[in-house]
Figure 1 (cartoon, rainbow, N blue to C red):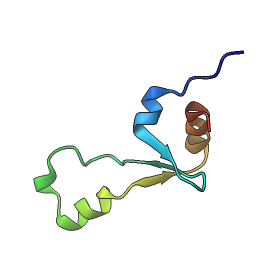
Figure 2 (cartoon, one colour):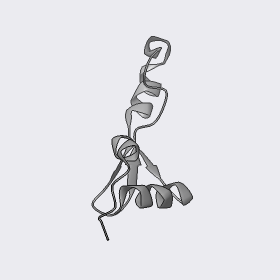
Figure 3 (spheres, rainbow, N blue to C red):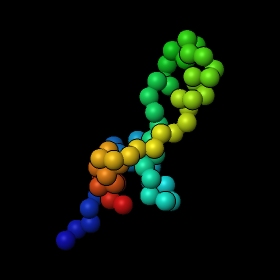
Length: 64
């Protein structure tokens, strides 16, 4: 049986940490940043951790 391929779209958007959590870059940081406060930009710049069903689905897509 051949090896399963990693879903390339999912691998570009999410990363599995060493402890098994799924991290991804949040939204709202692509454009119109001049209208957002420095505090809001700082909060949005942090990576988000997925939980529940979304994390489980991404684990399957990333073959980990």
